[in-house]
Amino acid sequence: MTYTYKYPHPAVTTDIVIFTVREGALNVLLIKRGGDPYVGSWALPGGFVRIDESLDECAKRELAEETGLSDVYLEQLYSFGEPQRDPRERVISVAYYTLTPSENRELKAGTDATEAEWHPVSKLPALAFDHSDIIELAQKRLAAKMEYSTIGLQFMPEEFTLSQLQVVYEQAIGRELDKRNFRKWILSLDLIEETGKKFSKGAHRPAMLYRIIKPGQVEIIR
Amino acid sequence: MTYTYKYPHPAVTTDIVIFTVREGALNVLLIKRGGDPYVGSWALPGGFVRIDESLDECAKRELAEETGLSDVYLEQLYSFGEPQRDPRERVISVAYYTLTPSENRELKAGTDATEAEWHPVSKLPALAFDHSDIIELAQKRLAAKMEYSTIGLQFMPEEFTLSQLQVVYEQAIGRELDKRNFRKWILSLDLIEETGKKFSKGAHRPAMLYRIIKPGQVEIIR
DNA sequence: CCAAAAGTGTTCGTACTACACCCATGC
DNA sequence: GCATGGGTGTAGTACGAACACTTTTGG
Image (cartoon, rainbow over all chains, first blue to last red; front, side, top):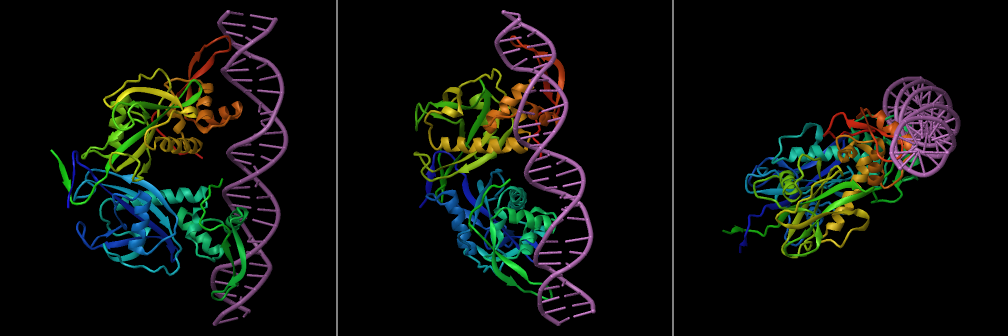
């Protein structure tokens, strides 16, 4: 079965930058390519848009297929369309990005991926295609959005401490924050509340656990 | 000559939202469609991406072909890919937006356009495809960007008065501004300077003319 | 009792807001 | 001289930035 057109058509893919904060650093999920081109290179998860699915649906589907993630915050980032960005044929990629909590996320290799692994954005391996550019832009967008929206909460698990949340903010915006100012600010937004529980870890005062009041929402603040 | 692929490929277009402020209102440039589908409807300028040009190049080329505009600020907005958004075939559109000075812009109808006209965004006609959605999103993006970048200067001709600039800001962000505060703010940015000339119009004190110090640049402020 | 992270208030500066009157011109 | 838009300053407020010590726990 083949498909014929009067004019040349590009192929269209979605690629997804999946961020998490783990071991105190911002990480992205990469898969080791199992097929040509760039066999064995690290690349972003993603794949071709089916003829009857929307771009958002494609990104969601690829995300689920290649990593098992679903029901996450997903946002379109930018479209990349340099003519030679894929050696096979003209491929235009609509990039998305998403955030996920760091805790024990199960990584599974899908059909196109031989391996999936978290990589700190500070030391990425050589990447296939223009995926370095995509990650760089995603990181900028993330940093900007952390400053004026509640997107940062998407990184958090059900219950978390303010210190953990602060680390997430610091990693995502790439700058240290004052503890007292951060706590005053985040609490003044009325987006999180105490669970009443405490979290003990190590030889020091246990931390209060918080939860997100309206999970799944990303609001513009400021 | 035909082009055959193993899997179905979507067509890819760019569509361009061209903003200006004229007669004290934010306008977009629309063309009357000369071909199927939606013959006779108003639509955004744009067209198919050639197989060997980048998305940016395509947007620039279509802009020049259909309106004669070149050397303008042009920024990618979003990609629209609902499967049924074009009745002909699956078409994914990468939308761009741009700003142009209001003054006596020559409008020319190109190959695909029978007519090109400015329309106030406050009363748009029914539009082809999902172009209303595209304009709505562009307007939101523009308003947001006016607040934290110098994009607004892209609307201005070589020389302009502060009152004209204020009207542009008010129209683009959709809200009235205090004259004294606006002038203090815009002058504190050191982006514009007096030309020394004055502009007389009507029975009142003539206004000082200003020019942009570094034309063509869009900076992040705040 | 020591080490380690949790938790907590105040001061200062800056940047935005609100607001009303005189100026220069054409007719 | 009057109508019209151009041009100017000050006071109050709110928000972000800087900054150090006490508390609670485990070992």
